[in-house]
Length: 430
Image 1 (cartoon, rainbow, N blue to C red):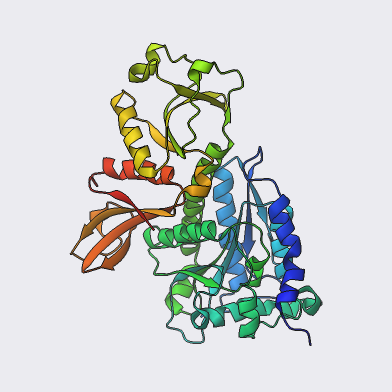
Image 2 (cartoon, rainbow, N blue to C red):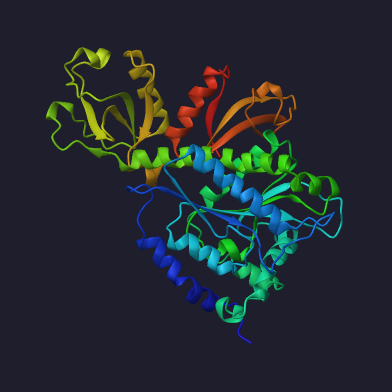
């Protein structure tokens, strides 16, 4: 029998690589597309919980709630469901739905289960096998649904859900969207803790067929153990489902805002007819945006304040003129440049990245809110509602917030944190 070899992996995934290299970039005059995948369905009931709760019913309820919240609050989002009723959808077709629609995010919603009744808590998975033994059982269970598909041997190249070799084989390709997948998963788990008061088991990696073939950031969410009496009851009731859905929605809203901010910077195009006096040909990685207006001002105008008669760059995007000053090669130089602009009278100025920074910036970045010998919980009131990571080194606890691929985004959040009273907060490498 043919095995799930590297040759088979390449043959199976070649169309996906083609999709990655030739599909349009996110944000080019298209809606943000999210695919919501309610786990299981039809003949595949998924796990059965304490009291007879069925995973397929709970996941459909939560998924439709998440979609409803997105539709209500984000008119610029196209929502696509892999299923909207109690029907069976093959795993490969769920991914294909996302790929055909050039989705920007794939969210697969499930309930966890265990032979024992005491395990509880949420967890979110991205592609990979960071810790094989810990995540093997859940990957086997979620992947075993392929046995319900008539032609599963052909479709999945004789993949065996019970083979650790085959599960590892799933991870032997480059996932260019892994960082964004992890970011969204982190946002989900943070919301489960802060908004739904659930115990989070964290962000993990495992070999799931349903997210293997997706060509966009993809996360499989385990909303809790329906085999745990207390958690099963929570997930089966309307209140619990609403809190879970609300948490996933909050994470989505934050994630969408983050990626669209990055896309906006990347898509800005110089004004074709801008006067020479308004140009700055600096080739550094960073510059400072100090003004945004519907009116185009020359650099001799009073609106330039302390930057009057200085070389500036004007960019038109979305009906607005955006004004930039300076050029810096490093994050440290960019910070100095920002301070200069603020002293010139533009207190709301902030750092943005030139396209060259994409290749040279040494991210990711995080923000250290504070460092202390005292041990705090991540949700302690000391952090004023911010969910932090606690890292111990040389007897000192570093309390860190956020993960940013862009130094400019980290700088914006740093200023927000300082305005909240964290005067000693600083950007550090992650």
